Structure formats: structure tokens, C-alpha cells
Length: 250
Image (tube, rainbow, N blue to C red; front, side, top):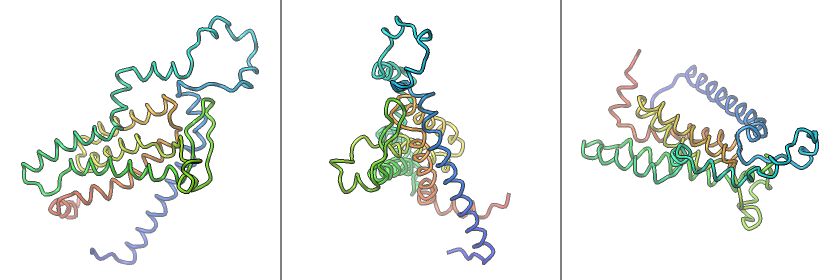
């Protein structure tokens, strides 16, 4: 274990506190933005009857109201787009099994003991698993058509899954898978990090535009991925590469 002076330990604690405060602030802001983000982005958004009644009668075109698509139809239309399918697949675990598996085969042939491809698979699967575990613990439902969000009792989905274990959304599992792999790519292959993170962001956007998740569902998934990726990337980094990184002074 590397020796750390009292001053270095104090700095480490301060960094940890600062990061914790930033994470808490981001979560609070994302929770506050849940409603506005759903109303702006989700194609499934349907205002409540009270909100519709507040609109002056002259502002509603009767023919348009009759031909207006239902939320399910709007969702099906956007989900049929090629760009949607592409970004949606970034949050699909088998996508990273294929990509990571291919890189693992290359690393194995090159004689590398620890493969970045294997790290991608662990990042995607591990972060997705953590998201699935947190869902019944936190117990928040997916957004309703009007953007409202209902909460179950804490741990309700764990102890009473038949009552509280359905339609849970916090955090988003698909976004967690996407960012779990993308952050590992960014840490282990910096040159490809921007592309991977853009792809993961696109996956999160598909969950928002389809109305499947609230904004904070996506943000929390990204935070979990960011924290886990640091541990995973370190575990899969060759000892020689760690030593090289420690010896850099630039």
C-alpha cells in the first residue's frame, strides 16, 4: 500500500466530501427537472384532463383532436426509427458481450493478461446488475403519461415484490449498461472515450423520449456507472501500466 502523509489523507477526505456534495446536488437538480424534462422530451406525454380544460376552446382544433395519435402510437413511431434502434442497442448487454468479446480475443492473442474487452463486459453487466438491485430498494415507478412519479415504501419491492415490484424505473438499467461500458472505455481507451460516452448519452435520450424513464433515472444510472468504472478499470489495468502512470510527472 502506498504511504500517504496526514496532509494527503486530509486532501483525500476533502475530495471525497466535495465529490459527495456534487453528486448530491446533481441528484437534487435532476429530481427537480423530472417533470419539465418529461413534458418536453417524452412523446408519450399526455396532459391531465384539468390541464386540457384550462386551454381556451378556440385554441383546440376539433379535427386535429380527432386525428391525434395516442401515446402508444407516438411511442411506436419513434421506436421504429433507425437512429433510435441504434442508440437503444447501446444499452443492450449482448451488444457489449459482442464488442468486449471481440476485443478480449485480440488481447488474448497479443498475450495481454488483463483485457479491456473483459473490463467492458464487467462494466456493462455489473452496473446493470446494481441498477436492477436498486430498483426494488428505492421503489420509484416509471413516469405516468402526465409525467407524475409515484414512490413505493422504501424496500417495498424487496419484501413485497408482488405488490410493489412492478414498473420500477429508478435507476434506468439500460442507461446503466450503456454508461457502465462507456466509462470503462473512456478510462482504458481515452481516444475512444468521447464516442462511447456520446453513444451512452444517446441511449439515455432514447429512454427519455420514449417516456420509459424520468430524467433522474438516467442521471443516477450514469453516476453509478462513473463510480464503478473507476474500480473496474483499475482492476483490469496491467501492473506495468499502473507503474507507468504513477511515474508520470507531466
